[in-house]
Length: 161
Length: 161
Image 1 (spheres, helix red, strand yellow):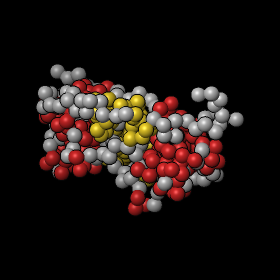
Image 2: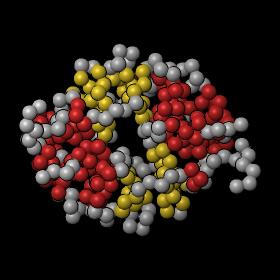
Image 3: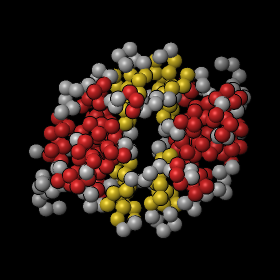
Image 4: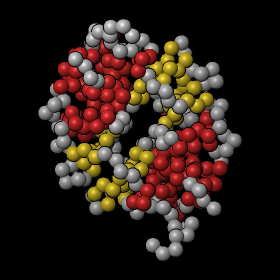
């Protein structure tokens, strides 16, 4: 790019940040540990060709770990101790990420923008969809993500003339 | 702590972590900058008595910054440049956090647990509500928050006999 004047808007591909990706065929326990170790609110799930599929939020992994009857009745949770949960956790072993995902109609809509989208387009899409995360992709390949707080940083804290 | 037997369940008050709080009467631009600087997905909003009210997500601040007609028509976003957004950002100045919040019926349901709730109760509630964040409060005072990824850490990574 030649002269970068103020009129040249920032593009999604320039501001996208790395974010952990997991494949649908990856081990479910590894994915859950990734969320735990890096304290992520979610991970981006891609198919085995690398195409983005959905976001797997931490609360969905908890849904898998905690039996439905315990979710429905909080008084059962009190007597359902952590050792029992440990046993449930071990059931993640040998499962795939695909098995953790909710049914398609209940999945988080994955907000995807092209790398050429301007920062303002990203912000407008994020505002409309009320989503905290956009996946930046080009030709079905994930470049990274843009978060709402990153856009706020670009819009509110950028040091501009 | 004396002997911490396995049978003693962990309680929300022991595992709650600090999280930025903003008051409804706080300056809106300060709150937006807090989200930006600390790259937070949201902040917990409390009333002037310190009682938790809701969570203000970054995407809601973007909704306030980006005019509705730009949110509705992505092609307008492309011509709506960052300088214009800067001007919008300046409109945050002098506003309060309360003005940023969506109408009550559209607010994020704030998931609150008592400090005595067990980790399993927190996990069950979070799984049921599909929320990434619980506010831990006692007597209307916020102790901190518990995130889904923190619960996964406690359930999956804890070093136990």
